[in-house]
Length: 449
View 1 (cartoon, one colour):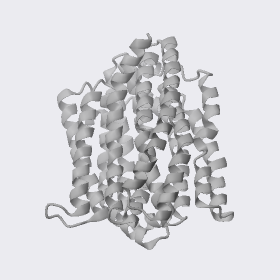
View 2 (cartoon, helix red, strand yellow):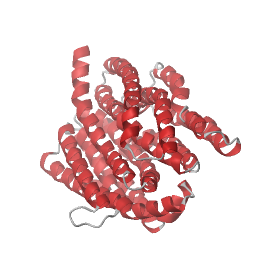
View 3 (cartoon, one colour):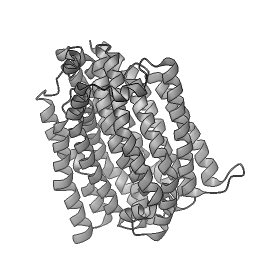
View 4 (cartoon, helix red, strand yellow):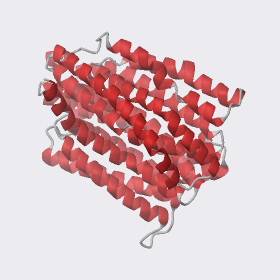
């Protein structure tokens, strides 16, 4: 059983890790290329990317619900329910994506002022936001399509498409940021153009693959024939996920706002560390996604004890993955500092932040695997909402605000406090896992209708 579990898990996790890693290379290329030209341009794009991060909270909510149900429906080969679920997710995502486009295209300066008072950074960021706003629509529809494809045994083509999209994005980054091949040198705006073009190519590619090879295809007709049971169950189990994502995500964005008011050097260092964290977390995110699919398949098929056994194995992998991520971050610190052209103060901040992030990575990996993977597989979504809300809004945000603006503590002390959230909630998360409330079959309602 152990061998079978690991083989099935790695078959899903390795392609998703590769896909996540490549996608994480996009902000890496933005950071490295812009850092060679202007530290403020790099900082601006990093702060402006917090807007995309907030959009991702809605995308993650909807795709978590899609994956939660699609995995279990696929476990019993119920294509009808998956098609209705697919249509419903698109119906929910459309107005959100267009709202983000509208706000960022027409009010980019106002949005940048939320994150920083530095005029140069605001100007760079506003130009980037106006251009990249188009990609929000493309990205939203593409990710939902990819989620359905990954849950219906099309992980490989999704990985290939994502890989190609990243390569195109990085090449376009170089062309538009530096002004190669006769193109004007556009710096931050160039990064936005590259993201938008590659997003359009990615969406077109997944549509083509879905039409030719998809086990489940999107149908406009299904938009008007979604059963009440699908809608009500989806809302029931994803509403806590949305609350969780918004509570944690807006709180996390507030941490960027706090760091954004501590000076240009603090912004630059934090921008780099954020990218490094996301890059190293790729395996953790894939482990959560893959684990959710495997456990969801077994729960949907009614094999509850096997699902519980898979959850135990996944937890152990999460612990070791977190330790490995922390060690890797420490080992890469000297290389990262030497590659980037930052001020001496920013480099000092960067080294200390990278070392302090080690404990954060251990907690982040374990919490990601349990909350986003195991719990969501069985529809146990309310706990994550409560846990993240209490941790973020009753502890991290108030402590960070007081440390930065009331007691005016040093930048590195503030950063240390802002990164305690994952470790604070880790014991509570594991205790909840052992209650096994996530061992639940979610397909019964749909099967009865």
